[in-house]
Amino acid sequence: MEVGVSILSDHICHLGEGPTYDPGTDTLFWFDILGQKLLEKRIGGGETIVRDLPEIMSALAVVNEGNQLLFGESGLSLRDVNTGAITPYFAIEADNPVTRSNDARVHPCGAFWMGTMGKKAEHGAGSIYWFFKGELRKLVSDISIPNSICFSPDGTAAYYTDTMVNHLYRIPCDPETGLPTGERQLFFDHSGQPGGLDGSVVDADGTLWNARWGAACLDAYSPDGRRIRTIPLPTSQPSCPAFIGANADRLAITSAWEHMDEAARKADPQAGMTLLLDLPVKGRFEPRVLI
Image 1: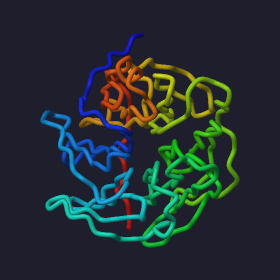
Image 2 (image 1 turned 180 degrees about the vertical axis):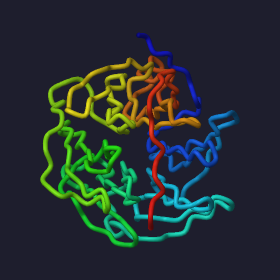
Image 3 (image 1 turned 90 degrees about the vertical axis):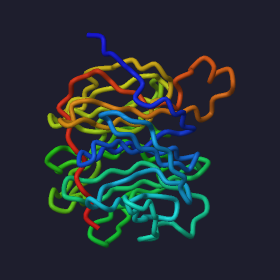
Image 4 (image 1 turned 120 degrees about the vertical axis):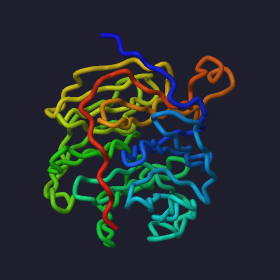
């Protein structure tokens, strides 16, 4: 079955990432990490709004109707939705000039898992953190490019990858706190195959949808760790999917032109745009983060 792909936003991001949909306002938010921009677009129609950021930021979570939590190179900040004001909230690696924020997602209980990495993808420079109700813990150390942070619908499992290694891991979790309750297990071994495992979301059936960087596709994995579907995309560096729409039944995917020279960009004119897949899915809305 061929899946239709259209352009949701033709604004070209250097490194489009971190898409998060707010069903309360029917708005998709995402980032141009290297461009230090926050973008937003109402799914029902309207222009893409581009806002400057004070530092490199890469992920967003909804706190309540008036506030968002942003994850950036100095840690967590609060953003007032009405005024756009961004206020530092909780420092994470703020004294480390080597690292920046990368992938992050909210566990069903409201805990925030966040990954840091080196600004030049330095080997082992990153970590994955857990933040919940004002408490911070480091969960994973010595990671190079943390991605694919996402959770099973019941909150009993977390997933993540190091794109530099291309192993997708699954970790048992306490559904009440989002903390690991056991050792990580190899969920899927993508090493030696084309492209890199990038951002992921998990739908209501437990299927994990992963954007495969450098391979121009979106892959679906069953809860038992089998790749069950691959959907071609019209740009080579898709970075992260998000469920959007009133029923969370469609997928938006960010992309990037990072590392492309002029010839590569000319051959890949949609690189950096945000795509919309005509693919009915049983998606889930992101939970609100509990700070």
